[in-house]
Every structure is written in structure tokens, then in C-alpha cells.
Image (cartoon, rainbow, N blue to C red; front, side):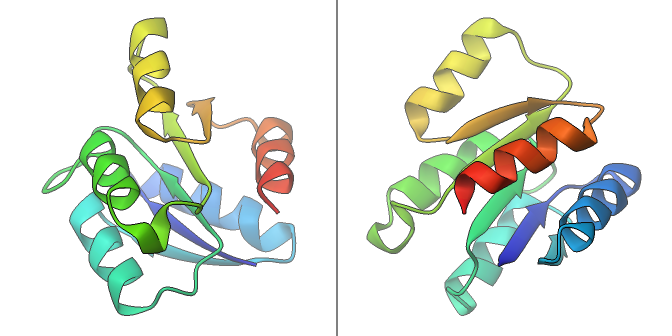
Length: 119
């Protein structure tokens, strides 16, 4: 499985990528939402998107809205990971089309469980 990780924080990038790699999948990292969207448009062969909310250029909320507005990405599982959101924000993100939500710092077992559900 190919997993695209949209995350601007280097520590979270490396942690999520290591979890994906340790599960036997392939991780690709984008530094922000705009880069992730352009990567997905250029190569629509990713199985899952893992994205942060607060990023430069295009945040995670805009990324989810943009992807769900494109028929090519309607069914792609999108996992949001963030440390700075409340219950209402999580609810709004899921209503916009996010598939799952994970809190940061990322817990390995929870991350693996959610990623396995996306397979």
C-alpha cells in the first residue's frame, strides 16, 4: 500500500513514515497540503492520505474539501492527525469527508489500527 503523508512538522513526518514502513507499506511525505494535492493529481496511485490540519500553503481542511470535490478522490481514505482541535472541529472534519481522526502525538498502535481499517 502507498501512503501519502502531508505534514509540515519533521518529527511527525518521520514518525508517521516509520510507522507506515514498519507495517510493510510505502510512505511518501509532502511538506504541506498544496504539495500533497499536486502529488495526488500527478500520480493518482496512493491508497491512503494521512494529513495534518495546520500546514502552510493549503491546510488539511482545505485539502480534504478539495479532494472530496474531485471524483477521482471521493473514495480515498483520509486520516487526519492533529494536536490542536476540539470535538466540534473533529466533527466538522469528518463531515467534510475525513475518514478517521488521530490525535498527536501519534500513538503507534492507534495509527496502525486506523491504517489497517483503511486497507
